[in-house]
Length: 101
Image (cartoon, rainbow, N blue to C red; front, top):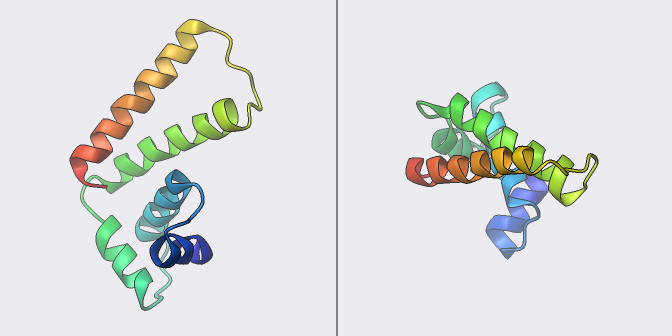
């Protein structure tokens, strides 16, 4: 996470922004390690009211993206299932945008 955060913040070429968002939220909400510097800012930014629901939304989008879109571990051939997932993805991104994540 630290390497990707550095690549993103310093060089503007991080990998998998959705994964980094998930990792930052996970760290802020669930990790009790006290690391100074940028990690203090991550905790301050992402440890917010409603954060666990936001993390759940990001995790669902991330998991669908990784297993069904980017890596296709399991094909998605059912149009209704695809629509259900994509609508949830769009609604999730909209909610995150409105929350300022």
